Image (tube, rainbow, N blue to C red):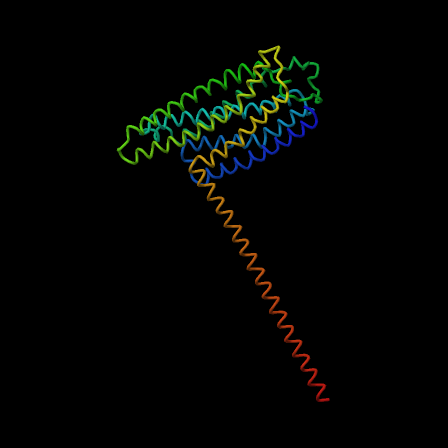
Length: 345
């Protein structure tokens, strides 16, 4: 990147990082305070928000260092790049877990609560993170470009210019991450959400004129599934362009992909973590209500602080006014006493 483009890239990445941190902290706080962590779906949503928060607080700063060719050792650079891949894979496996959870909610509504318990959901969350760590750190165990960058000759050096595609094998990135670990889960999730929508609509049609509770249940499930499906669509829109460009670079030897396009793809992938909290806040009722309560509390505290300041100012003014009046009266009394003494003399 040119120097001007580099500064623009850094500025946009910093803004995205701030949005990631603030938005996802709000989502985590909202899920925590509204007591929704007792429900398995919101355990997964909170975990996904934690992953998105780490994208803003850890992954984006590391990406800025990597793209600006930070001087470090080969394996230090490789470790930073693996962290970036691990957080991306965490989002994939958590989105898959959310889709499976929603499918079970519709498939077995009567036995869902006894099957998908809070304990089991947190165990599944831990397995999702463990799977993402294993997949993301595979390059640390040998699938990298160590020999391609003259690694053995520079094994102990710390002046290696860090770059993502210099240390990460393109075959690992395209064949393993994209074709084996990203596209199949996306296809499975698409099928699951199609099944959820078709089943829910069929149940709603079958329950026309039936009990209101049953219709309300399926309407809530349909709205929540639509919101989570939107999160999935945004993930695909934000991540697929970057991997498609890497695939074109890898398989199309005569096709040149501009580096600016790659940079835009990276920014778009980072922006995905900043967009998710907006979807949660506007589309999921419990999180939306918790955010409203937080906003009302903040506004109420500001009003109270303003009222206290006004009251304090009024009190100070009254005190000053009383002091001034008292001083004036004392001066008048002193003056009258002096005049009396002079008249007696």
